[in-house]
Image (cartoon, rainbow, N blue to C red; front, side, top):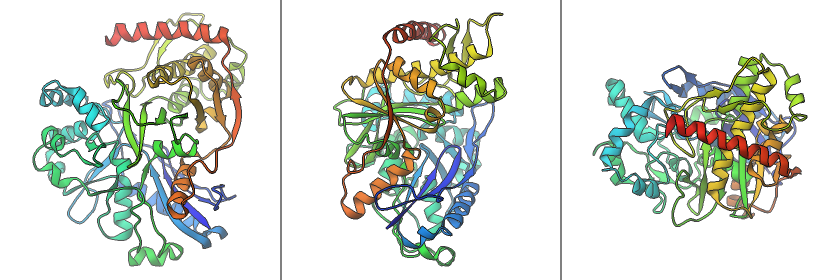
Length: 482
């Protein structure tokens, strides 16, 4: 049995093949890079048709692999949240809006006024906060900035639904997993929160929302052109999209409350599968599937900060990374807020920006790199504290951590807890494959635990030094954004 996974992330579109033991098949990764369109206004959008072409190129390539002759099912993970408008014919009529787009920050006061100041009830009902990362604010911005474009929208779609609509030539439901990142899902009832959809947008908006289904509402029967193009997939079931963070939790082995997943890719997140009576302040509640709530927080900073510092500021000097391990924490005299794309968890200040305080003539390039990596670790430690479960193991994965052992060490010291650094290189795609196998064969999600490369223990003196740095960071944040 071969499982085909499509992994559409924030920086690349990829296809991968897994065997029936959920092991990555050699030579089966096909990849195409992409970037969001960004500018100084906070724009962060993508072109849905262009992403479709990239994904289709990857599929064409991977289907030439010998193992592709035995594909049993296809799964999909996408970056979330995302949404676009489609017209009556199912064609994209807006850009693909992403979680990183902060242009709608000016809409938040008006949306709060519609809630009569009761943002907490909205938070508990939808699991989300009023923020530019979510659909209500972004839709309000589109309506105000481009009403002609908004008037063309017949239906709201996610990128997964758009891909499937093109391939199957019919409307496709949005999965509960992806919908939970929208800010309009009533996760307790597994349905759209119609009252908030009407209140925060308008009475007619409800008719534009797509149908909902769990991820295992498989789609079969490709349209004729695609059935001819991808003969191996003609009769394969296609599972609905999972949010990439949800899939990463499963791929990390964090499928119950005993394990917290730390993922650092382009952005970062800490998440735990857990039923809670109330969503903690500053955190969100999303869904893996209807029975697996996911509580945690995500930041808009992660590997993108590392990339920005290394490539744009330090011009790719790889020697600096090798020198990090020998340095004591917090010896650079800098206080950094690494909020290059605004803030999500835990403070949700979309108007926040990156800040470096304390630069002097003594400041060197290695100081700047170390201070930024420590700053991301310290921001994530705030989310870890809000999760409030020191007994749970932290399973850490993502390309950014695996490429920087010194950064993984900073995480253990910032959290003051052991970090289980995963050897798995494809945790998101692995999670999709595990979810598919559970549905196809009834195999439990914990039947194939991930391989752990090593466990990094915190060191008391390094913990103490980083706690001092965290207090300085908190003080700077409060002075700027109290």
